[in-house]
Length: 551
Image (cartoon, rainbow, N blue to C red; front, side, top):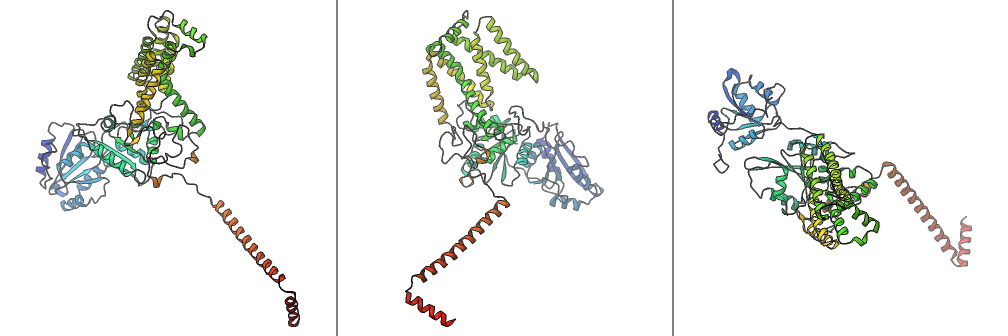
């Protein structure tokens, strides 16, 4: 039955419910349909539907289902009816279902569904769920300082890892089921008081703007919802680290978690965020700033170095010292290929070695990449197929691409490298300048959910906040959130005075108040004295006589 057909409601007659369940689940050998007779004298017919592996421990005494069924063995049918109506045992995560579509959604999600004769609703009881890898160590975003936990394949576990770090009721988790056949659970995680409402609505609209058979990974979701699908630059930031996702949520961004995928999508994704590492905020600002600047240099080398090399040796040899030019010419003696073909051949060879290293499992893949690179490079030089300087250029280019923290972002520049290679090889420095102009123009026109891709290097709506550029400011100076958050929540850090400082401030205020009072009293005395000295001498003598008479 498809969703377009009429929805079948749950009947009070358990035989009608069982017939419909068995028709829908025909030839589904992994789904168990168990009939039971519970209550005193076994008078109540019941039915349990569950996936065998996902709910394999349902009959254990220490499980919620086991306790419920054990309780049903000893009570009357009326008490069973009352329990189902009010959940007297208080079993966690029990939900009442009214129609069969909800039943099958619950079963296929890995939960158990309980039917009882005479009751027109079913109970969905959460169980252990589908098997998964659990929390593992991060592989792609390794850091020296910081958490080693990484996301797993279970979306519930991933949201719990974020909740573990952000223990606030304002952290919201909204669920979507996407895919006509896969019914993949996608969670949208955000901080309610930080995220902009218009941005949140835009994300929801895009998630509901398409229909597809199935979503098997967050990468499919990313390609279906991004702005510029033709651009090689990713508009979503991907991360496998819960601490990184939590930090971005505190910046006012939204995180999408997809079931069966260990990669979270952070949006919007901008150029500068792809160049940041998780440990940038855990280390001191001096070293973090140096490493950030080094990554930008590595990005430029990974993109421009092959093209610049060809432009210099083919068109602009005068900018290099004579000895270096002679050394380059001597190294290329006997090479049968042109400089462009030589560089392309070696670049493709290194790409092949990298791809083979990824496909070979375990530590053997890393060893194969190192050994393969050394063997291919040295053998090519000895056979006069390439010159030694080209091997150095390709090696530095490869190191530069590996220094970029985000692999998907680095892949865009690995492709762009060939574009600059041909521009530099055929047009020289002029071609490199044209390529840089076109690339920057493309980046300036990219939007990620309405946010310019080059933020914070371009102005957008309001100040971009502190600490969002290339250099990292000291943590105590990073008092303002980036521009993604609401304007009334732009301040993230406020300084508070200690009790001793407050006491000292009160004492100083009290002392200054006493000093002001004393000064005022002295001024009044002086004014009185001055006013008395300015009177007529006769009046003063009269006052003196009167004073003497009075005495």
